[in-house]
Amino acid sequence: MRIVVSGGGTGGHIYPALAMIREIERRMSCEVLYIGTENGLEADIVRRAGIPFEAIEISGLRRSLSFENVKTGVRFVKSVARVRKLLRQFKPDIVVGTGGFVCGPVLYTAAKMGYKTLVHEQNSLPGITNKFLARYVDRVALSFKGSGHYFGKNEAKTILIGNPRASEVALLEIDPVEERKKYGFEEGRPLIVVYGGSRGAPAINQAVVEMIPKLTETDWSLLFVTGQVHYEQIKNQLGELPERIQLRPFIYDLPLILKASQLVVSRSGASTLAELTTLGLPSVLIPSPYVTENHQEVNASSLVETGASLLIRENELTGDRLFAACAKAIAEQAAMSQASFALGMPDAASDLVDELLRLIEQKN
Image (cartoon, rainbow, N blue to C red; front, side):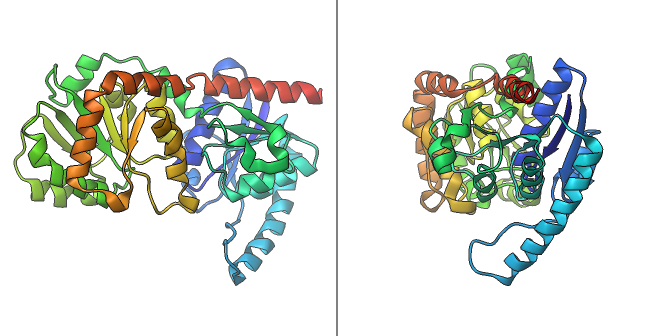
């Protein structure tokens, strides 16, 4: 298989793409070309993964009238010309986009040139680029049930796949007891993991700091991932803590300790929710209010409605409310875990590759 992949800007677009690529490589011989931008995280992450990478210059559209949109239009036209050249040279069997504005010229050009195309939407609420591309591509893969109607007359092109990131988490083989021991956590205590993304979330951090005095009166263990930029300040603020409360600035292998935990407090990005439901973890979700169209709260809604998660909006977040939500989740852990696991799609990467193969066969 020869495949062109495009997706970027944030890890939420890049890591599902890498999970899909690894599944293809596991199943068959393939050649991959990744098209991104030099300014996005993909330039570093994809190259570090050893995948051939080409960059184009493109920016996202502003949602309000702006001269920047004129500049974006010019960049789009120039990018189309460069993408056309790259596709003619590489001659892919299929072109796949996983979100971010870089996908716009790549998938648009590929569809116009007659290549088979698929876009993957990680969020419940589709991004502006994927809604634009739905008119031109052959298939739109969804991560959340019920998202198809956002694509209007192109809903017939949608297929529920899930997030490929979930498949990598599902394959993790660990001993929960040994994983907890790495952090010095005792057996028999519920373990709560709190994290607010790679850079941390100040509002979540503050609420955790406020609730720690109450937490010390329970038998809970806590792994508090603060984010690099907040770690020293919070460490100094909290001072000496019991061994069952651990602070870390960042954890590279976070899914390992997640698999050994009983409750997670986090944002509700698409990849995070894919991991939580695949592992069947209860969660307290605090959606970021700083994302486009509040899509993290929309992401969280399916978990909250089925009883897999509790939700606290950031403007309502306090230490007391967070502690109460954690206490409720731990008391209802079994039922919440079952509801979470029922939403998981651990075969997403394999199912996505199957769909790519079906599209290629249609062309042949």
